[in-house]
Length: 427
Image 1 (tube, rainbow, N blue to C red):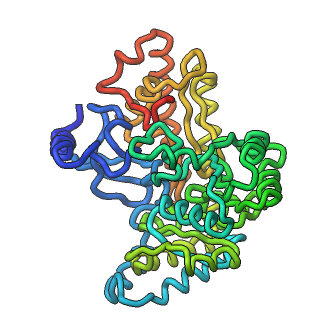
Image 2 (image 1 turned 45 degrees about the horizontal axis):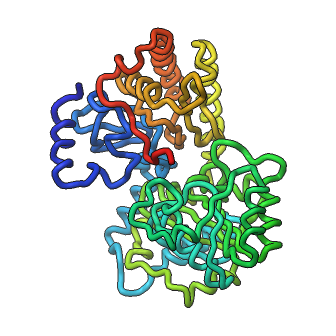
Image 3 (image 1 turned 90 degrees about the vertical axis):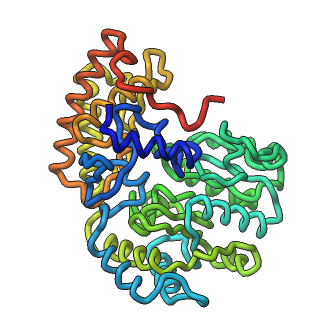
């Protein structure tokens, strides 16, 4: 059982915060209760500390925004300097122009830029813009695109979204161009945009991204890449730079400001200019602290070989993980997938179905050994080779426990608390 302060804060939060969290993926249902910290109070580099003073090596990195490391000195200095002048003003701040210019220099599709705060803001704005310029209503989507009604209505978390809104967004399958072609065929001249994560756990096959681009343009729709996760991580200009496929619009967030709240819609000038009429306006869209952080973050990523380091360390971690799984006879049940800068671990049972109990036991054993594991590896500049080697030592010990439990059939009995629950329920 965790020390008292963690449980006390969790009990207090239950009284005043639905779900005890502002973000589902950070909440208590995503960690083994009784074995996991519930609140973190500080971070430095690749490490974090909880309310009980316990230190952990972190790979979630706040779900991806922290690309340089917690409390990066260059970013912190830039924010402190801006703080002395103010945070928000009655007219635009020059940083809005400077950061927009930076984005047009590093992102292939970016000719103009509008800022927001969350990835969900950006994807919703891009969808609204596409509908405006095409005069169409339907959206074809692939991947996760945030909390707004237009997308979340396609998921099992669709309570509160009107059925009429749900019908306007149609998912298609990654690496299956026919699934997208069917949407266009069944709804001729009705699809405003194709919005997709350009890459997730599996890489594009048979020039899938090129096929999507060409089909979307033939059908007169707008192609939007949701680069909230991939931006500034797989390449400075995102997955569109890495794969050499340029969309009409793209949405960025997370790693752009090393943990400060900022997102952006970027894209072709002739489409972006419609934002002069399409309503996309936020009181804090031009908030200067986050813009100062973004300027410092992008400049650092641009001038240092950080992204190649993410690939190097991420590949070492991914390959090491999968070797361990094979050594312990778990290769068919536990696998680390994705591009090295951001990987996910999949846990399955003997039938191939997702196994949250196995994930929970692995997470629990990592936590007791000082690694904060939530299922993903978001590498940052502060992760060292020594961090990776230490993590693999912990993973070896955790894997041994899991292998023993799977063989004995007592995975659930070994958990110190409630196992991890799914964010999205199966339909």
